[in-house]
Image (cartoon, rainbow, N blue to C red; front, side, top):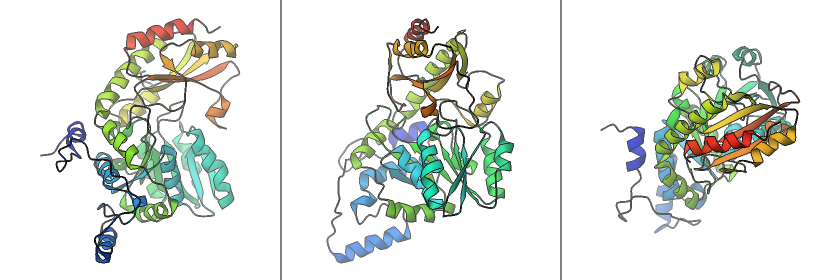
Length: 392
């Protein structure tokens, strides 16, 4: 019987041997065998099927990490999923797997700032050039493709400013020019969109965020298709990137309630965005709430729902008063990351945005990032209402 994703994540990876609804945490550096022949048989089985969970050393994983991989492979509808100790580790693995000296990469201009640091600065020493394209203009991407372009790295929606792109058109352009594609899908997760089904070669999710859902674990996943599998497999073997069994267990446990939490994040964020859109001090709400807008149309075209992360553009000549607004929030925590059960707020200065080409801010315009948690939305709105009075 074919199960929906909602049902699948509730019933998969049960441990009937130990009569537990979740698999055990198996920690190991040395994988022990009965004899040398067993080692050889395991190694042959792994070579025959690298997804089989036949490991000869703890860096490859244990039964705990393999259980999480199997779940994510089903969710992503991909060939294989690799697990990394952080979300950024998955970005690193994706990029380094497919590029060589002399290559060019096309990157979303509104990309996560550490990703910009990796592509724009770090890769220079390997003679790899990164070119940033306007996420609101598919023709800008098209015009920047050259014979040297090896990879198109997409983040959808964009970091902090949340531009939604036409993903099928990007994939079509890439296939026409024989270019690899990767997408950071942390905002949506495969619960809301399955980029691998759209034709992307690689899909990145920071498991630190919604997979975990409780702000107490770090991890990343990289889903790949057969086209790039051998390249990623080779890089993974020499990278030393490994998720611990303890973190894998916590992430697996969090995934059990992914659907329920994501639905609630969406309900709360939609109410909050509708409230904020009516406030005179708020110039823009970066969230797919406004029907008829291009951003809404691009979101609706590909996503079955939305998460709890949004941005605000606030107009004020008094920067300190905008920071006072953030500091006056009572129900919002102040800190990096997001995707947990709690609401969070950050003032995003130029350093957080990165050296962007296509994000233009006037001196009296400010970006605030909000993660709308699972609290009562009325309480969240009342908290925002009182804090907005601080803006001058």
